[in-house]
Length: 151
Image (cartoon, rainbow, N blue to C red; front, side, top):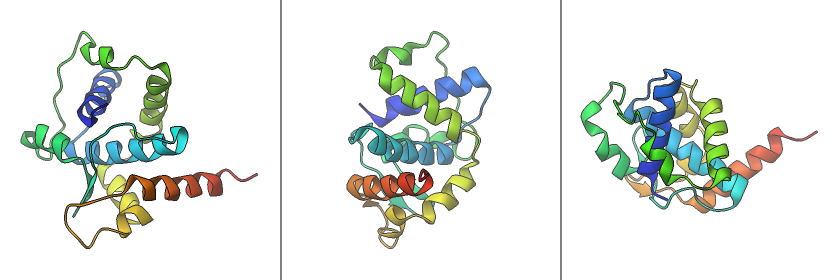
């Protein structure tokens, strides 16, 4: 799967729910979706690399696609739900819906602050555009999940 497809899915949901997503927020949603998908399924949600930029994790191809919107909400037209055809796996759809519902209420800057305070970002933040290793993401967020779900 491609990150742009996940981004378009989030934008489709945002249109349905009346939410607004800027490019900055989209980048963080993609990062956290990748992280929690790794925890839940043991593999990546999308194949694109996530890079460490000044304002946090970025999928460059998606950033470039929506660059024109700068700091304003991304406008995405898909009234017929064409993007839904890309998602045939019910587990993926369920995951994306649950993820969206849990993360959409965070502001872009909340998500930036969160990512900057976590190990996968801290390990690479000194080198612009360094790839954030999915293996490190999986380890860190699995540990975080276990820590937060102890009984």
